[in-house]
Image (cartoon, rainbow, N blue to C red):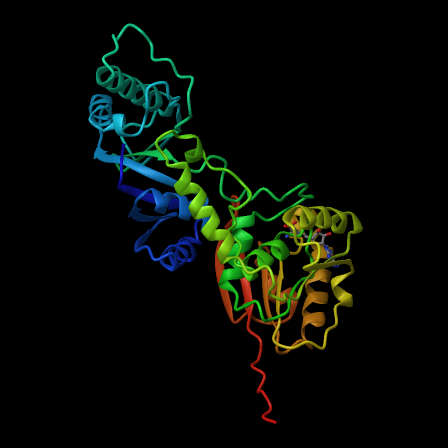
Length: 384
Ligand code: SAH
């Protein structure tokens, strides 16, 4: 089986640089592309990136890339790849995704069917099976994806399974949760460090607070879940266990964190509490039903991250205007705090009453949103 892999981490548009930085922080060099980051490595790399990347969606192995303008070229290209180095006899290997952008071949079901035929034929040849006897697909699953961009085919195997945003702690999500990997990315983009107070005044199901606690304690985001590669027989189980054990040693469960979440809706606070308990942070994250208009604090240098209701999603425009205006007034006295507000409302700054120091375009699912960033004034430390 394979020892070295060409890999990509996929992510939401706008988060490529964040994922790239995370990968480099694991000591792996990489290239940032559109919606994905490319790198290479061994089995340990696959395990570590799945376990540790907070902002990515999935880690995929690139089995091969070639030009394909006709179905014959697609068939031959897929057939030529070294499938025997990935798929053991008995493996299930659905062509789970076919995507075509700006390419001559665009009928996605046909792309799937042709690719499947090519892999089957290659494995039948490799395992000396007659062509008229179908391969039994009863074993571990290897999801194959075919992507065509400008007539270039990229053939991949997904190593992740359910997307990395599924950390395993969410019991309930409420009406409009932010994805866990987007929340983590925003925290990593903020200037929050574990020694600073952190508040999400519209915490909903508690995603930002939980992700901040995981970052603060250096807990691997994938610690409580499994990955597709774990069911593959050629992936060394002791290696998986040792990467998990190392992750456990790297976590700092004793660090003091100051993380609070508030929400006007007591039902959301109940949901957030369940999620916080499930994530193991019942003693770490403070949750309270409170209107953001009632937020006061004497603490300094904190970070506020908020994903308030947007017009289209949860409230009518008049209420949103009032809420954003109240937000501006409530946060105004907190001069040393940095504030990061994620909304799709293009008139946010007007309603909030001040212009952001920086704006960053992101996608919350398919919805275009902006992260409005207001940086806190630095507090001069008085020398005693
Ligand atoms: N990021 C959250 C979702 C936030 S949705 C998550 O991951 O689940 C916006 C939240 O703002 C809702 O839960 C809503 O109850 C809350 N909210 C609306 N008006 C508010 C107010 N005036 N003060 C505090 N919270 C408010």
